[in-house]
Amino acid sequence: MIALFVLKLAAGISLMWLLMPRREVADGFFRIQMLVVLGLTVLLVLAVEPAALTGFGRSAVTAASERELATAATGAEWLRKLAFAAAAVAWPAHIFWKLGRRTPGTLSIWIISLSLTAALVVQAVTAARPAPLWLQLLADVGSATVLGATLTAMLLGHWYLTTPTMSLQPLRWFCPVLAVAALVRLAATLAGIAEIDLQTLDLIRWLWLSLRVLGGVLGPLLAAILVRSILQYRNTQSATGVLFAILILVFMGEMSAALLERDFGLPL
Image (cartoon, rainbow, N blue to C red; front, side, top):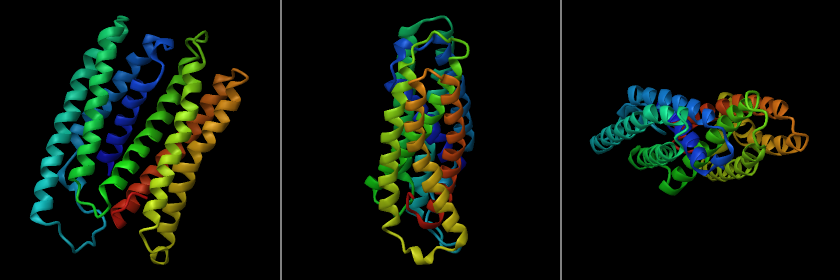
């Protein structure tokens, strides 16, 4: 679960770099961001195992088939290679941004983003899950975008403490992105809920599902509205505080979703 969570987080962060208005953001921000993703991708290389891609929706006594194990082993190997490629690019990229070399820095963003997005697709295709592939991809992209948008926006908000003259447009840009990502993830969650019998849920799983919906879906949607309103008064510190609080809820929601996916094999 940890490896897949780290993958979604790293892929979401790199996707935000690729899409956000980078020209109005200080070079130093991307230098620190490269080091963040470097740490995440190294952790992913060390943590990913074939077991992370099997066991979804299975009882403790049901073993994966030989074909599923072989596919999971292949998927884990590709995840390691793609994560290693992203890490290998992130290290020199942080130097490019430190020196203000935006052209190679931007090229690095493209390579890292494409590598981690490909890794996200690989794990969806090779993991032994009963969920339809389209639903799994929709859920994973939604989760990655929510995680990446929340964390990147929160860190960008902190950057205004050191660069107060920076334009607010990049931070405002995250508000509609976060709202759309939350709605996409909500659609995937509702599709997953429709596939299970809610009467089979015990108290613990109801708590997980509540955390998933309230913290991981509705929380980011509320944050997008609040941050947009706060930024009308150019109060970046309050906006950053809201994003920090929502980030904790998003992490709790995604980990609850991982536990539910382990038990039911569906992206809830």
